[in-house]
Length: 191
Image 1 (cartoon, helix red, strand yellow):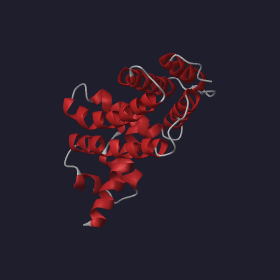
Image 2 (cartoon, helix red, strand yellow):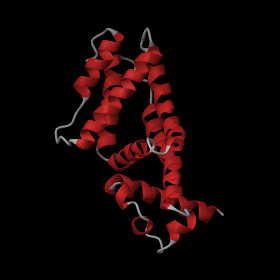
Image 3 (cartoon, one colour):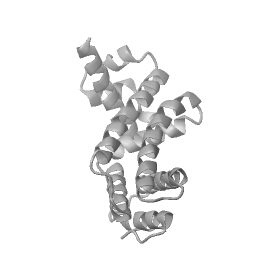
């Protein structure tokens, strides 16, 4: 049973990579089998059709992202606006760099959710976890409206990463704009 669960996770990890690297049109059983390094037909054994595969990815991806975000959030909480801005900029660089495939897969699923609203719930859970952390950090730093400011911060972070995915800039480093935003939200200098 544990071997089956590991194999299913291996297939889903590969499906996330295929979706993020090649897009929805190239998300096929064969492409996932190749990426996972499993025998032909393995993916179709776990997911009876393409919709089931996408549902599987939508359920799996937030868990992967949660681990990444919790790694960022597991360290000491930022003690000042500059530290928060620096941490968010580092996360943006990671999401648009080494974590690009997962980030692109998430955006592909978000777009898919416009036609398949049932995908919104699992994808929304990941966003809620990020919002909880950002709201708490802003509360600790003295925000007068931490929930609102947390949403603004996360929306901006997502937009910055999406822009970098769509229009790659080799000199990408959003630290100055993150400092300006955090400082503006908190009414302080964040440098």
